[in-house]
Image 1 (cartoon, rainbow, N blue to C red):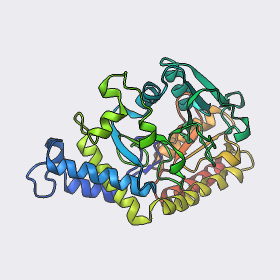
Image 2: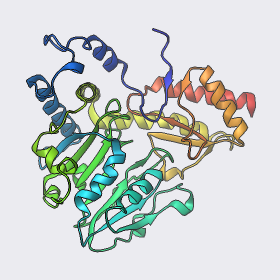
Image 3: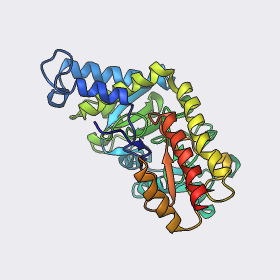
Image 4: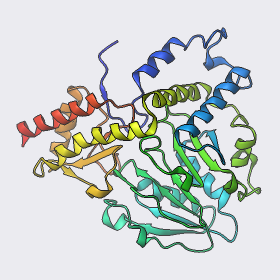
Length: 362
């Protein structure tokens, strides 16, 4: 195999090498079944056990022992933008949204096709460079829920503290920081995450829902769109991406073996710290986009003096073995997505490259 590149892709993102090696060994035959998981029925006992174990592992890592169900669904987080509203934005209620970046804005827009929505706070006028202060949040009643995006993948910002919503259910898109830092998930009534950042490969979306919140869900939508359907059928109502769930199972076990979410948070703080120190110490050669108190540990974003210099940085970084450092196509700039599976060595190598690039081009 050719030498592996330093993978900073924003998603699909880096997977642990140990997981990839084990998956390679088990690709043709899973256990002693005589079959690959890629060709195995989702109604088989083997897949049922794998599915149940993976759901249990996820809840355990999140610190949720009872009162919640973990679901595995298709369509990515973008489908959840619609499903949350279809299930809970019932007549007479208002969906409240915190607008902190592109994906939260998309969730807000999608829900607007279902029912009335309200922007409870927004940092758009500030260029998405910060998270609104909690005292700025203004809920509109009667509130069905308040939806947040806990970490903004494109912009590189995050919530440090979850909003206090009282009796209003709190819903979160946690796609880009789930299992990456300690969050009191018991404050959330529902949260979801596309797997392709910290959970596994693309193709499955994890949804965690509180049982008491599920009771409020609409029964006047198609069966396939109801969270209750996936709870009742243990996420096996229709054919799931079995092999993707298997890889998630391996990633969850890898996460647990390293020390769980607290250890992931420690590592991620160290990794992102290497990059932010270079940015902050560059005298303006590298310019951080997000206000320091709102910076993400998952997605480090920055700009340079002019687009030509950014293009030169990208070209030279690719030749040096780095992958995925371009900012999102909607905003440009530069971004290093240092998810759980990105090793410290990759971030150290990038920090060293940035220092040398400035020395030559500054």
